[in-house]
Image (cartoon, rainbow, N blue to C red; front, side, top):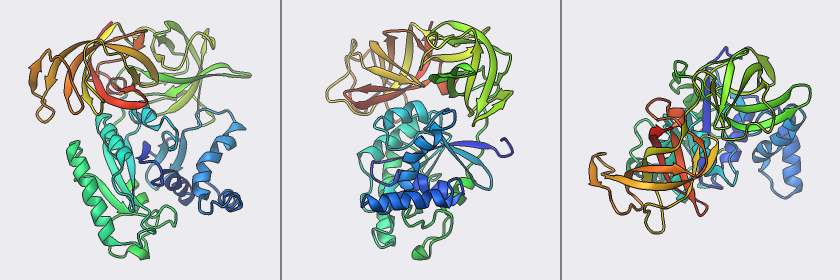
Length: 420
């Protein structure tokens, strides 16, 4: 498995800008989905009058394809480039995509932002870029998609590029690093081969850009932390929690503890991509079986760590947040839902400690009465039920979260300190 370094990739962008088609196309171009499967989908798509949806169908149908094996996590799909093997985290198109981005993009090392050439920057484009920045995505590749729709116009591409660069500046995302590529996921332009339709573009193809991504430095020296995504019962094995190793190393035979459920046991088996392995490290999506732990003992949102150094559980925690949108103002006593790694817990704003100048990070006001959209602040939050979090400075992977209310993302933040 590990003959190539592993990268986790998020595909982000506004609904209908072509994320699923790009994913299907990437899987197809890298040989991860055989030609005959695409053909089947093409026929199916045509019969439904949706010609051209075959690549998007690939994603939808993977779910059913996987049902036959042991399903570890439907949302994870892998493909290889010359240099890396990639796991695409989270299938675009989920209704909860933004929420999954927050709890899931903390899982991605890099992201491809898909922006449709005929539509430009749309509301979700903004939201996703903001989140990618807050969640510490290192490199953004910007795919300006649907170039076929705008007749491969260089002017249109430049306009969209300019718009996105403005947006990246606003959220202070290092946009020099951002790699812009004009593509058509539908026609396959600039995905694996340079397109003759855009001879004016001399940059990399999408696969070249993916090959050129910097290698992530694995956080193996931090203590083991595995946020649990799901708990399955698999015949012949028993209870199998599933999650992604964020930090540290898990070995068969280790004694582990699940918090806040507060149950522990010994690791019997670890499985990755349907193969048994003896050890798993950061970035690995695994299912594992723990002696003495039953299906009802643990749940999604628990965090697994070493029994002798268990994950911390917050009574209250101090955090730095940035408010993205809120119809009115946020005051002490407000209780939205916090999405952190795989858990969702209602948390009350116990106090607003400091309002910060978003540009400099300096304190602008002590104990403000309220904060509103566009403000950055340091706040104290009290979870309504036990929540496992870590200070972002110690374990960044378990220190970022999103604040959701009324079906939208209100704010994103990082944990400064945990009062256990």
